[in-house]
Length: 146
Image (cartoon, rainbow, N blue to C red):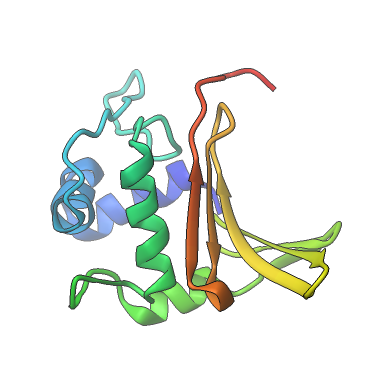
């Protein structure tokens, strides 16, 4: 799925700028207030990244996934959307891809462990491990650097 095209489609469906919709319906309920939206030359919000969320804000997104769309006893995203997001649609090289999220399985001394992973430009990572009820976030600042 292309995040920028998805943002355009969602904005068209809700008939409001995608950044206004996401700020009101996702970020505000999560207490995420410092979001840096980038814009294309034609003025459309770039939903493919670059919002410069903090480590704690990224952890909130991971927790939202782990809790099937719920945040502080409120359903922020439909549970069916989270289930679809975590459905592998493409597989290869020991990993699978859902909707904007990767699934990895790694061997450990206690057996194989499966987790979901979102990665961003510069090395940021949000790891969601459902069996362990764990979210881990790594933030880095190596933007546009492999």
